Length: 398
Image (cartoon, rainbow, N blue to C red):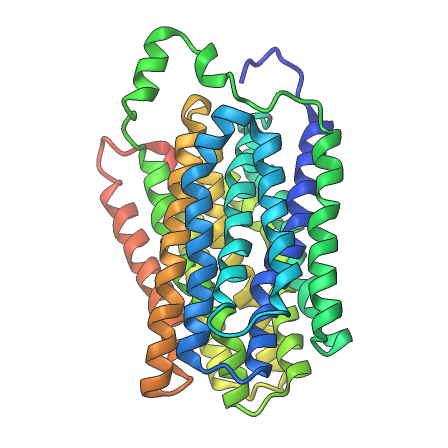
């Protein structure tokens, strides 16, 4: 970004609201409440894992085709297609049955994938590098409101199908309003406007920097945990005797943590560096999982652990986005795509492994999977940081 160019804060705010509104419909209801509804329909753990994997597979497809669509029709129209796919999913879900439920599952994921790449790449091109951590933190905090509003709606309406699906479609449709009111250039000409040497470098896939590489590892760990947690937690809760309202309440607490802790995470990343922030967040996630596993699910300790666990799960995505947003603006689309593809691919694997592990070894295998991933991330990042204490280390790694 040219340092002399004015920062388009109005456009940044509008595109952030697009993310927040669509995330409530697409993720808060589509990814968090739909599994609760499916559990109420009597679906078992392997089929719940397959449904969750179908959503993440749809997201993967959206991430893969989004850059191609943005080049041809622009970011605004690409986001619009993603919103439309999700609305179709909500409109058809209640009329279908297993295994046809996998189709709207794919569509909800496709919608998020298209919106994620097109909207957030457009957004982060407008953000000055020195404010990346804080802007990403605010953005992720606002979209994390989906984790509060979606489950809270489920508590209020007892996961009534008509209210749930109508609300999901309404929030998704509402995101189109600030989208189409945004007048900022949507970035189709960024690569074409670069100098010829720069275009060749981008076209030949410049080496992935250490910051983006760490971001990919972080979101891989987060995706395995995220896909398993939100896809299979309703079955974990059911096995521990919780009813639908209690399950939705705990999901709401996950969302409260995700919303409340993202700005502090982004602020800390701006000051302490990415690696140090990853270590702290992964250690806190491990602590939260231990507290959640040892406490009775109806206790204050479980509630506090749910808030911390939800916050740290969301922090993995925040930190991956910080890594991409701080990277070379000319390679931003490539880096955003790498981070988001890594997250989505790992989120497909997460619920599949957890679903079959829970069937074979019991519902507590869900928490074991989360603990293993967060603990491994602490060990990996500590080793990486120690290795980078050599004379040629990169200061950007923190």
